[in-house]
Image (spheres, rainbow, N blue to C red):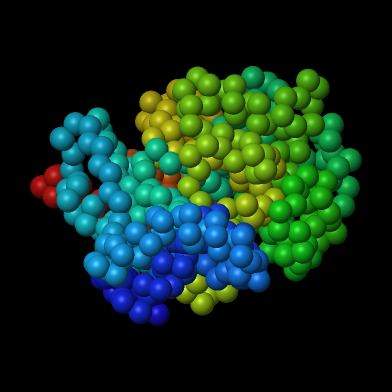
Length: 463
């Protein structure tokens, strides 16, 4: 069972000795080893388990920490006098620009608060309709330290990275540097694909719209085993290509659509090494998107050097209602095309606005190609364009959205624009939903209610 904020409004008296001891260890920097993850959000439930050394009973230690540190006893007195001071309440920030919007911010805020209270660790939501923008943050960016989530926090955007990679790919075609309909083995780096099934038939277009038939290497048992053995490994392209070598294709290239991270891994190899005077795709993203749009809080950097103001990421790894900090888990996306970027909701809204609304990133021909879709064979609500999704097709004839989902081990993100309603939403959460757990169920329920509320507001406005 997941404890809610209501369940933990008061710290029960039986917790006082434990909490006092924990604060004592933390405030006086007593050496200890954290050997457990964290569960829930309220103070007692994020209490780590400590291994206590016999050093605690040394006379010099007792003198230094018990006699000289009077503050400890003051903390005890405060807690015993009033034990309701520690509360698990969501932090909420609102930024509203231009009140002429179709959505009711009070309902959206209530929805965010409700699901944070149910147990989601932290969320940031931005909603844009025309010139009106509203954003909010709730919950925690760092559960262990009790740091509130803010709208300016950076989170990993996971597969939304693919949209950036697709844009620079199509821009290279506009510049005559490559042809997306050429087989991948005909590029300068073609020798790298000698063990990739159907390399002589697969084109860049197939990679962009997930019609290559290549299996997703992330789902292979070989990769999963290696990931568990080396969770902090800084995966290079050569390492990851080995997991795809000599695998059995799922279908003939171009036959149908099936999402696979392998596609953008291969695409990143082509962009980095595929033709004369190649510029690595990370530099292309910086030059063609991040710098011109002034996305000052967007980074495509090595996972070993995470950006400042990064929210900690969590996951219910064992599906036991127990959140574990997986901020530094590297599943291979850092610099390899299919994941690895960090951003804010404000920067992502600028990017999508420039791409689909202002249309300043691609010419008309490229954008038309990008928005040509192939139905996903695994999920009816989704169709794949060139590095972009057509999602929510199950909500109504004209109620689909363009954008992308982002799903990482410890982070979840959505970036979508409903063209018929001119509503954009950017959602970030510092919790992964890769495992079947209550956190995944809560997020999917929240997502469904959010979109329903946004579209309901649009219908009311049109009437």
